[in-house]
Length: 182
Image (cartoon, rainbow, N blue to C red; front, side, top):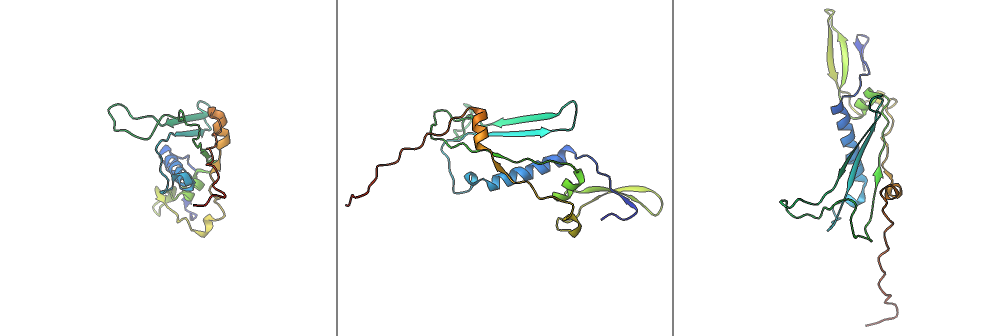
């Protein structure tokens, strides 16, 4: 932790730092989604990835980007990826997951994600120097500063409603084989 000759200012997060935090959150969401496990396979799939940034900027309070799946162009190899949402798929499963993170302290997020913190040091010769300091994630002093990471939340019902996607039609159940012996 800083000494009396060190100054640690809570500088705003750079876009590249925020991108690293977001990528780690996306990786956690994907790891938590059982539909993305190695034993799953899909002959048809469509997806919509959405990134919403709520910013403390009067000129840009909300930024929203979408990356929607699309079928391959005519000069690309065939793929099972189609436009979102899947057309003519009454039995399709729609899954949606949200993860929200509020960032109140840029330095706390830097510490949580192992990013360096800028520390200004007054050297013995009276000159100021800036150093990038990384603190280990298991440092005992960090336990009281850091809150737990947010958990991914199932938002399937809200996403279905927003996109106008009907509930899937249940697959027909095969006739019962009770009482029949071969």
